[in-house]
Amino acid sequence: MPRKLGRSSDQRRAMLRAMVTDTIEHGRIQTTVTRAKETAPLVERMITLGKQNTLASRRAALAFITREDVVTKLFETTAPAYAEREGGYTRLTRVGPRRGDAAELAVLELV
Image (cartoon, rainbow, N blue to C red; front, side, top):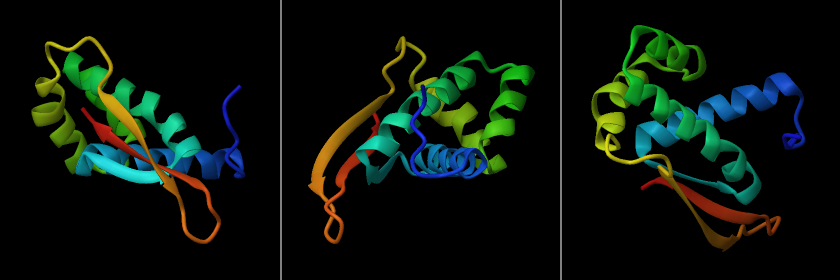
């Protein structure tokens, strides 16, 4: 069962789409451990789509990623860099508690 992350399903989907887009665009994001654990498989799925490099896979990526320029970057630079790799494109590193609410923070980055 997927984590609810304290949001309704449409808000949760929008948040995850934004986090996947930012991770692919910048190569890394800092967020809570729980959100990072939910985001990592989605990032990996998008990179796998990028490796297929078909029209159908590009449209599937465009349906989830919120910006066209990020999809172009995914298909032209990011995915080809992982051509020899069979999965495991992301790394989750815990960085300690957040000041204020002490939520456990993590950095999700592309390997």
